[in-house]
Amino acid sequence: MSGTDEGSGGGLSRRGFLEGSAWAYWSAAGAAGSVLLPEIARARADDAASGPVDCGPPPQAKPQSRTGGESFPPLPLPATPLRRTEKKRPPAPPPLIGKMALGRVRFIRKGNERVQYRDWMTDPADVDSLLNWTNTKLGIHYGKAEVDFDHFSFDPREVPALLFAGHNAFTLDDRVRGQLARYVLDGGTIIGDACCGWKDFNNAFRREIAAIFPNRPLRKLTPDEPLLSAYYKLGDFTYQKADGSKYQAEPCLEGIGFGCRTGVIYSPADLTCGWDGHDHPRGLRVVIDQARQIGANYVTYVLGSYQLGRFLSTTKVYHEASAPARDDFIFAQIIHEGDWDPDPSAVHNLLKYVRDNSTLTIKFKRVDVKLTDPGAMNYPLLYITGHHDFRWSKAEAEWLRRYLTAGGMLLADACCGRAAFHLAFEREIAQVLPESRLEDIPLDHPLYHAHHDIGRVSYTPRVAEDFGALSAPSLKGITLDGRLAVVYSRFDLGNGWEQFPHPYAYGYSEKDALAIGANVIVTAVTH
Image (cartoon, rainbow, N blue to C red; front, top):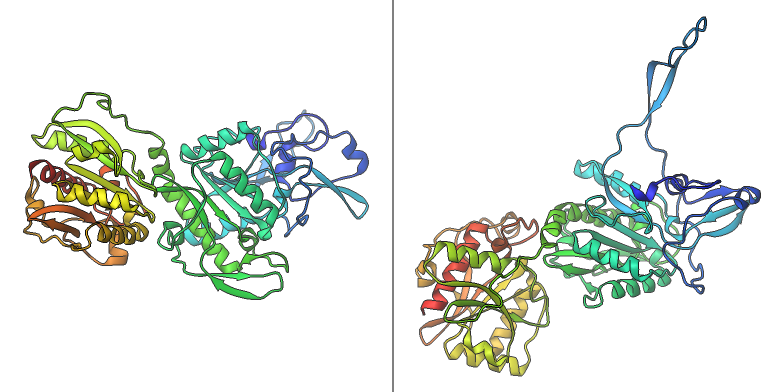
């Protein structure tokens, strides 16, 4: 790991600093000739150290064992070889979380010694303690790494998650911001934690994430998001204030989504002190037991979504996107104010499936349209999906009403089966067609026999966990003048079209999602 390479020069080595505790004790004379770590998180001159120097004890020494019976290499006779007992460390587990070096090097006096510290190590055993606890609870074996911006590869295959934690303000340069953006887009996860709920770190982390992802704001996680149920199913959090008093409130976690994966996770209330299992009368924190449960969900989620993140880092190319549009079927997807394109490869795979398994002439072309676009009336089918709440304007609702009553068809799909999109779509379609309502599409409806005969379907494991053992399709629709105008799936279709595991989705199996999608396209084209 590049973050633990040996440093050059005299005094404290890079490895010694990174693997040590929060404190590196130097005498004034010894520090004078030492080479300090480079200032990677470039702090501004006015980034004063507002937070505490430390929050807890250093991590425990790594476990060691002794192997007896080993001897030195042969010595010149007549000397007799002496046996010794030598320390042996077990093989290091693969790193799952890398703790990022943050903050300027600072010095204080501790007794008669001059002490060097940096803000990122004020809670030195947080990741060690969390992984020791989760390794036991989850039956896994992962470790941590300690990394810095100048020596890290920014390759999530080396370290899948990076932890930013501290009290003080920090500032990153544009080079590092670009590397962090690429790291997340390549499948990595950034975890932020305001130690002790400290305001200066909170403001700095928000500022830096906004600079790294200017078009993707942090948002509050909704109760049905996988991070709140990946291992422990969590409701309200229990918070503790500086005076020791406690109260319960909704989860404070925020995140940024990248497709169907949350690639940035942030807690403005302290979790890291809870991971370490210590308490002190300072700041705002989540209580110890629950902080560890949240941490276990972090670990589970990172492990479960890593391969999905790597998959989403590649984008399918619609090779006929620039071809002239004749009478071939072209897939049109609605742009809306929510996360309107969470499954970027889904439509490509569905079109390929329909082309290979039907007689329809399908063009590998997806157009992204806004409601009210004049040309959108030309498409027989419009598709809308997303995870989050959204609203249509009065003009958009009126345009969609005219489109549907004129013969167009709408397919709506709650990505990952998220409740926020489900509730939003039911609310918005009721405003578009106030005299109609969504009703279950019966199994004898022509939709289920337009191309494939669909009677029994399979769902993802999470559906069975929370909705029971379903076996029939759960589509709803709206019929206008005897014609099916709206098809809505409460359970995800797009994840199945992508044909890659989405471990936290409430949806159909790949086979059945593709079959349903094909039947909808055939129905839209032939009716």
